[in-house]
Length: 175
Image (spheres, rainbow, N blue to C red):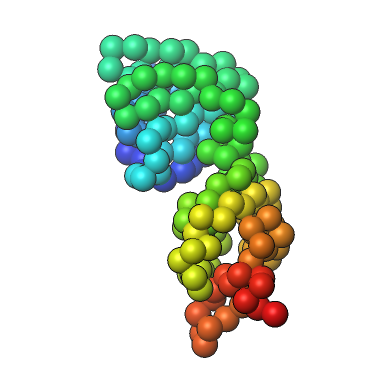
């Protein structure tokens, strides 16, 4: 059983049986026989993040294999290099598994596509100069409103409409 992943997913694999379960994502292959784990491997990101919630998994990149226990996380870069990510990096990569979007101090050019991905917003920025403004979001995946409020508060922008298009505008321009 093999799954190729571009994106993010949480897995729960029941133990038992002779067949192993493999997830191939970027330069990493995750092998499990029974566990709960999460993988983030977005096509535009430069690394794959694996977090184990229960049990163990083996992560292989190139000739190197590391075994992760419950609570462990590992980042695998495009060249197969393995590092232990910080807790904030893990939250940002696989917070979705707990139903939360976590973005810490990133430019709107990165934040808007994430909001569009997770909340299906089709959100735009009214002025390209705003794309460098930094935003922080910690919102439930069930609340696009909370996510937008976090962006408004931290980036100095205001959500609105231009015709039928959803846009973020500079708060000074909105007055």
